[in-house]
Length: 375
Length: 107
Image (cartoon, rainbow over all chains, first blue to last red; front, side, top):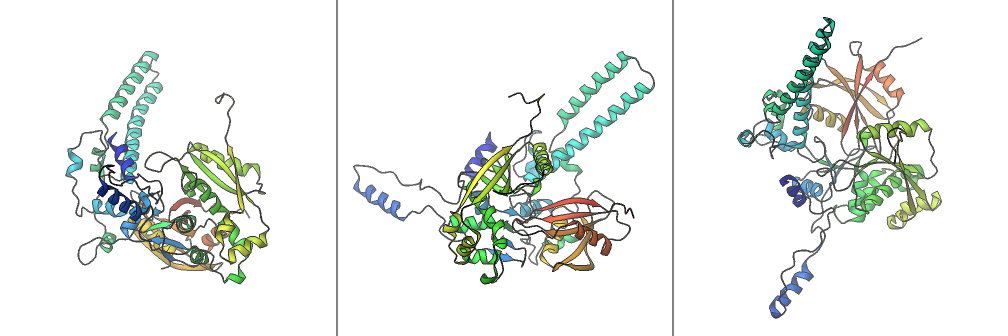
């Protein structure tokens, strides 16, 4: 599996802290190698040597953006942080657009590949799009054959005739599916340039970097409070996230943010890759390793320890999540301190103390069908 | 153009590949936020859609209520549109889209 191998190399590190694994060989009888080894050991560090700058825009609803393409790539490759604004998750908009507008890239490599290999140059979004088109094409074909069957039934055809037609239909569909390929479907794409595409090209003929990597507020807190990655202090970041003069901040302004962060930190520090669950109506998605490796296994709902909702509320979310073949985790956050002490810790900027005053408890909610789930 | 309009407009034009995308000039204020529609045509479709961008945050009260949807239909959506496309902007810039149909009035 060449693809899995490349992904494992590319996403070698689950977080932006790296073990020091490239020390030189130590030769016991050679004192010089000792000196060099010690020098390397002392000078190497396991964290990022620079801090990544962020741009925070918006007033009430803030957007935390990383614009430098190297920084964007670094955050994606070291723990899958952030989302490309015009991509499904990894910021691939620029490459997709270059390909679509035929700038700098050629498609010749794609066409020389055999039917069932997915060209390496294709971005994930493109592959999904092509798969969808294949499915539509297949369904249209099936519909055609089903119409024939219906016609036969209307004309009072015999059971033998029907069987024969069904057999033929199955065979034809099988053949059709075998012939379909991700490569050919490309030809039916409409690749025409549109008027709007010209706004993407600057005066030198280069493409404008329209896409930024956007970080969730909790991701940004994690990358500055827990790991030294972003070029902003946690105090400054939090004052931008809750844009009110300190003396006016109430418990209600900060409690949701703290609760969401506690849960984010809880799973990140236990090795899960945590990403936004907005597409499934929950707070977070948990990936064992990350989006390129497998689908998310769990959907997390963040709740207050005392919170209780109407039953239909849980059941409707669980049904959506079950439909996407994921398990729902209800994650309850318990707060050990009275509200006014929490508020005080926030105002004094003592976030380590603050975040350590919360506990997390989890329950997996699963729909059980007696006829199907016997275990 | 404010951030949310710009983000959704660019998403529709440069990610979803919609055509004839334009920001409709009419607007109204709702709890301190500007509410304005984007109109455009999805690729492979003949029909224009009205898009309502709304921001959504993990830790703040959402602006999105049925009252806002009602007010939008009353103030901004012309009779020719049966439905709007709700564009919810998550706080990592992800935009999720939902149809909301006008519905019938009973009284």
